[in-house]
Amino acid sequence: MENRLDANTYNLERLEAIKRLKASIWQLKPLKSIVRFSKTILSDAINLPYLGLENIESNTGSYLPTSEKENFGSAAFFQEGQILFPKLRPYLNKVYLAEFQGVCSTEFHVLECSEINNIFLSHFLRSNIVVSQTKHLMSGNTLPRLQTEDIENLLIPIPPVDIQHQIVQKFEAAYASKRAKEAEATSLLASIDRYLLEALGITLPEVAEKKTFFVCSDKVVGGRFDPQFYKPEYLQLIDAINTSPNERLSHLVKFSSETWNQKDYFDEHFPYIEISEINLSKGTISNVSQIELSEAPSRAKMIVREGDIIVSTTRPSRGAIAKISAAENFSIASTGFAVIRHCDSTIILSEYLHTILRHRLCLIQLEQRSSGGNYPAITQEELGNIKIPIPSILVQQEIVLHINSIVEKAQQLEAEANAAVEAAKKEVEAMILGEGGSGA
Image (cartoon, rainbow, N blue to C red):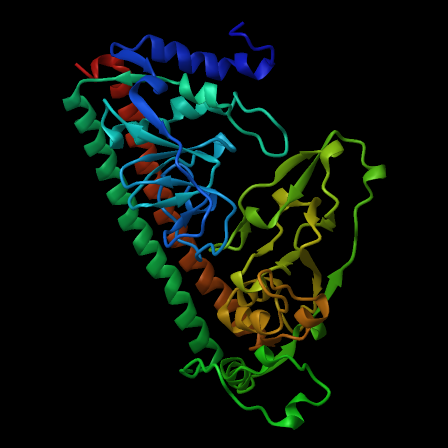
């Protein structure tokens, strides 16, 4: 029984992964015998980049830069070449081979390789055969994590050095191809901005940011009094939008206030949408979590239905805006969203509104009308005050079709990139396990 009584430990997927490992022709060693667990913890603010779970891309281990973290209670020090292996939510598969020196969340174990190629090990630790084990070893519901002992005892195959190098080369080639296709996809998506401005006949001025500026009193009287609202770049954006037909959002849509009563819900789980589950580049929901009713957070209140557009009211300028599809119909959303339920279809198409809300013409207005320091937020009233450019219905249709075709091409490139990596993973996994003579 492996000294554990929880059923997940004996999940068939995990047992099959261990069986395959033990059938390998290569020597197996527990992780703790081939690496050193570095435990240098820093509590003082230092001039080093900070890395959290949000900075690591799932499955690939790529580094995702974000704004610098100004304050942290304590953090683990890591050096270039060390491997960061997460304790939290192992199914996200966020294993990182450090490309620089820095500090990271204490939710990572920092591994220093002693007798194995560090690049090879990082690839193996994010392989399907490892995830098939670790995702069944989690404990805890709200923040499921791995125990250090379970990580230390992960079995690692040790193929010969030349095989390790071959595996690294195959992965590096697959990831290079992936990066090239993703760059092409990114370029395609970037072209949307130029196309949309041209289609709307709007020219945005080049504005140099100024720390000091003057505002005439007649613009302030009866309006907002905070200086950020009147920054020149914001006012010039509004002037540019006013050169074309536009209308306030509140005049075009109806916001939903439909809320959820947990007492009337009888299932053990419920579908719950958080801000983190929105794909910012596509404006879609990446995944809808299933939350136990007994652990429902107090902010789980807003009912969303197919066709709704949800807009994050916390840090809204980042563009966490999504249109609810049939797959997410009747989900529960956080109160951190405003829910747009109905558009006046004689004036504006729902698909066009979803597109334009995610464009900088609207995102900059969301930033302008937000208030708060570290966590700026926007009220539903201020959200309703942003100006939406409104071309004819025919032009709206053309914009939606054109942008959808670009997004589809970008998604196809991303799918091809991911398929190439998955194919490499399967081939390499056979080499790692010494199956089918691949490692002979």
